[in-house]
Amino acid sequence: MRRFAITFAVLAAVVLNVRPAHAWDDFGHRVVARIAWANMTPQARTRAIAILRAAAPETGLRGSVSGSLSQQQQISLFVFAATWPDVVRDTANPLRMEKYHHPYRHYVDTFWRQDTDFGTVVPVDRPPEGDLLRDTLRLQRWLATGTPETRALGLAWILHLVGDIHQPLHASGRMSPRDPWGDAGGNTFRVGTRSLHSVWDGILADSVQAPRPTAPLDVVTSAANMVMQSHPRSALSSQIGQRGFDQWAREGVAIAQRDVYRAPLVRDQPISPAYRTAAFLAAETRIALAGYRLAELLNQALG
Image (tube, rainbow, N blue to C red; front, side, top):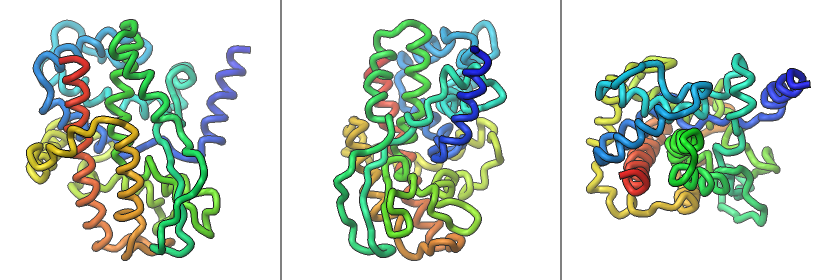
């Protein structure tokens, strides 16, 4: 009976979860975490590593190195944890997937409508979909007062979800005549052979030509330094202090309406160089803010 339940859960995840859970890609999430690490207090860093190393072995969150960790090993463990909620989607490990994969936790779509491409934005009286805002409250409690296992899970999910909510398409559900029930955060909006969602997920890695699927830590660090140099903490100080996930979600909707669904985007056609450049500039700012805000959140919780 147990084996049947696991098999059904895997099939359900594959068949029913038509909205991919990724926001940014592996590289983007690691860059967000690397920016956060650079802006965390020593105490917050030490406590974060201790929390991850106390995780249940089955999670994979504690890493494979025993004994003390070098600074580079600590950074590697921390930035990996930011990708872990996507890693556990792996159907090759069905037990772990059944226990830890939460596909609807990665987004909270606020619905809005355009009757023509790039036309007037019309508010829609429809409840948001997705569990991100609901679940982050519980995850922050886990991080503060949970058991060693739940504290590690809470930390990994917070590392990830701060990145998720700063990807505009993880807060937006655009409705149109072609997508009367919404476009699943841009997943059904095709641009050539890709979805609009996947373009935004990979815009940083594509723009800096990061190796795939997993870039070395020095490449992640270089990209994080580039983002911080382009968007220094001092230039974003007024926005960094805005700490609520719900406020970050509202920002994402506004950015989707202004910067995602905009000319020169043409549905069913590959994106143009002009659109790619504009998308990169908008995404780079969001990644910087995500890293700085994540550091603030963890410094308060751990440091």
